Image 1: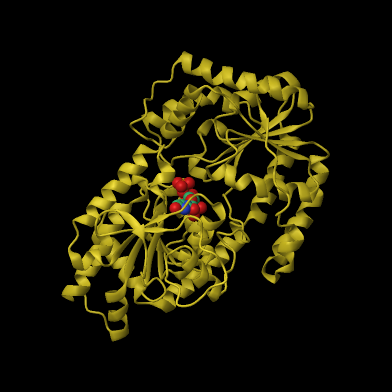
Image 2: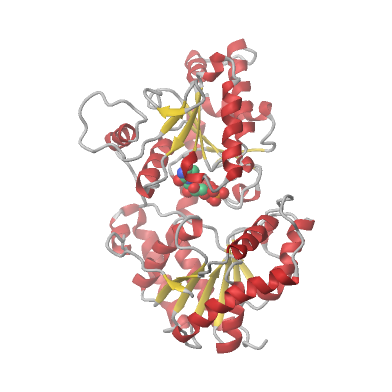
Length: 498
Ligand code: UDP
């Protein structure tokens, strides 16, 4: 049975709240002025967002604020999620997800039995959603899970559907081809599709798809501005900085922990986060995030500094490099017990740290971030990204990479890679730097050195980065892109039997 997801409106941030801030008044005004003509095209049609989960994952995180802003503009929007007790359905859709990302470990054989399972779970959900629908409604379907539901309801009621695909890979391989072959009969029925990068659009959708980058909410706990005393307080509450006196806010219920010399995660104590130049990566513990390559690159830099093999012109810069610390931060392992791959990646990283030369070990901090409170987690990530000298996202592959957007918004010059999602955001040498080989220690060391010793260049790139996010990657632009796509679905949607 489909489930309607209630959205807590008590803590909503309204467009008027954003507009009070001078930096957002223009973007909010742009959104409002673009809305009127689009509204005329969309009419009074209701919009149903459909995805597969109300909790966990980027889509579920982004939908509440998106729905609230669309409602505030005057659209009638509901959010519904697929429900099933059949775990095999989610194994299948996870496999499709992995195949689209060219994960060779996923079996590329998709059988008629798989198609039956995919359709039967969707049919149950479609049947329970049908009584709530009118023929002029629009379904916005997120990712592959609910596609057959939309195809069925489109055929039965004549309503239209927009497919928002949040995943993709920029090459065609046997794995990606098998997933797209399976999905094609459903995807082809959509009226329009949105992807995060042009490279992800399958050729059979050419002319019927456009680009919609993910976006961040600049007033969320993860991205809002923080005064210096707030940042220090958050570090103290999170257990990442000893408080030298009484502080008004209570400690977080769950605190951050640091990997100790005994190989266990424990209280962090004094890490020098406020004093030593920090090279930071925050990500899930996933091999594709390039943790090992970043560690090797950082250690190569430290070795060069110790041996003075690449002399640095000014003493102050030499000091910066000597004091620089690598902080690798990711989710508390207890929060990812259902992700054995993540646990294995973290174990390997801990093992690599255990075997470091003691001089290097002192320069590497592995942080476990509490995940029980979204607010506390967001605030910690926010502070770390603001306190860093260089934020790195050394991904081997990246669908988009919101961590990059988040750091760019905070005026950081991000050291990224040429992974497709990251190159959608960073123009190499303008608003950040791109490593061509995330597994080459020399290249990473060279970029880190260049960024660390040249704060003026970093700040200049950081200003471009922030501007770039402001122009394209804030939630207001995303709302406008959805509105345009909805209007397009209405005016260009094909006849249901097409
Ligand atoms: N994140 C977090 N805490 C962590 C690790 C990651 O809040 O310990 C957040 C991060 O700030 C970002 C999201 O998880 O908002 C990851 O999104 P991204 O697009 O970078 O990568 P994905 O995890 O979707 O591959």
